[in-house]
Picture (tube, rainbow, N blue to C red):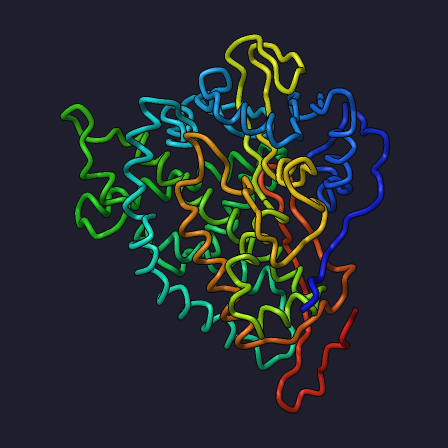
Length: 420
């Protein structure tokens, strides 16, 4: 059976106002791969931008791995946002951060350990029936119409409800969660909007914490409240921070992966039909979706004058852990700018590397797999309704926000035209 590939060609403009790249720029967000390729080809493969407070962008796999593993030189404790944002000093997220992602050892170690039981393979397996039922319910809501937005109507609705379940919060608040997450990550350069979302999220979590104090349940918020640190209850600022992290990091990242994968399948019928007909290709395909469409870029702050990929950076500089760029490094991945559905060698960094590697990787893989399985079972043939209406978000998390598709329904007369 032949393998269908996707190849990214073309070169971006020589640069942008303010430096080599604009993480929120339309061209970069739509297709950053040509930028990464051009940066790696330079004598110094570490790009620089003065926008949003300034940052460095290593693009080689080895350089990203080395920086991500060196948490003492490149700390997370001063924030992981890709843009410099002023802190509301009275906010719990300023006081306690969002551990474990904004913490280094020892705080990182025990706050991460708190999450691991809920993210273990055994625990994630127990969430699968709920996830599958949710996907089927969403699909039943639009499959009879012959058209849907695969991102807004489906991908964005799944992780937020599963994370909400883990936190023990009402599913009817899901639309609010989506708004908060998008404002915090997608619109991070819109500071008033971002701060308003943070304030509303913190207020919501305070209310939820008070409810758990009165009536504990079998959820993460109740677990945090029952946790003691050096004989004392876990500080409320840390509870709010860890809960906020679970919601924000566990939703936009995964819905972006699901949306990107559905966009790919809508535009690559050979890959789509291969997945429908060949169950054995699924494990390889899932990993290739994660590599090729890696959504997450994290930031670190240099604690001292140092080097990244031979490029000097000063203490206090922001260095971006460009995991998506590393996953397109031709020195590590053969035909790196091609999507190869049955790629066998695939040590991608979609979930990061080092002590801050994503604690929820088991959950994300399960949600991505189940979401695609249920979609292809219900809608095996579909295509984009209008490629011009596909929109992307960039910055911290890159992923499609609108993917309008059409598909055949009984008696509808709608039939996607096969493409080659």
